[in-house]
Image: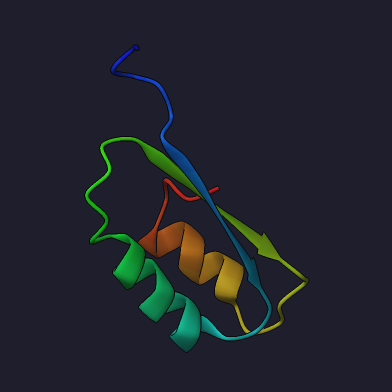
Length: 61
């Protein structure tokens, strides 16, 4: 098996709650997997969550 193969995809539905999202992403950052991706599906948040995600977690899709 290739060392660069994706192990896990984490998909997070989100709408207008940066505090909970922040806690969630902090928790995920402790995962001991070598290769994983995080995908946040935002439902048109109006609380600047998308900007917060982009500035604090630029690798998150």
